[in-house]
Length: 304
Ligand SMILES: [Zn+2]
Image (cartoon, rainbow, N blue to C red; front, side):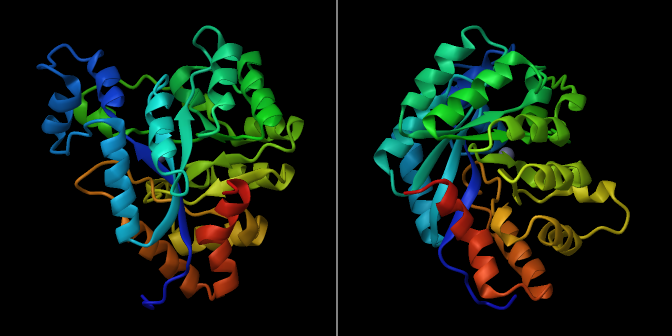
């Protein structure tokens, strides 16, 4: 740790676990007592989110405490975008709205149009492995076409998909990991070159493919978020090695810092930030390049 801080820091990957999020998960559990928005957080030892604006207050205070300037907040079940839109409406300088979107549900075109028409919703988050929707499916194309038309971004989760909250609650997760393929993202990104396309967690285990995808499509950026537990699937790979490869292939202009922070009382995951800053310091990455990774690239994609 150098103790030096790179300002401003923006976090491209935080989850907004709203009351609506817990109520949606609660519908899949047989034994919810009362309101799932209270019962499920209690089971997990987490703080109940309360109203969308009070959860926005909590995130605003938390990020301010850690000197995080702006962050993406992701509505983390489909059809919960109004929760995140309310948070962004209250703190438009602090938050950028992202939302999980399931292209397999009916009326893809009207739903995505409605979401992107809201200035507070700037990134659709696709989880092909969870929703069982191929990136080649016309419904995915509809999302990208709408993003291009409205100048929005698309996030596509690839690789390993393990969702802690689902596991802890005992929810089944019958995901088809074959559908989260960075090379399929590259094919789509090439058709929509103006759409910023975010592949989180360096491809979450499909690191080489994520680098190939980013090489093929200049509008692909890699987010650095989470503890990057996928690294253990590779022999002798460290976070420092991951940054070295990524910097070599895509450069500092296409890496987007994120933590994958999600619930209270844990709050913002400062340890992720310090680990990543340490890895970059160890590589001798200078302040200017670190400033891009930790903040500048975010501001370029999500202009305030
Ligand atoms: Zn996440």
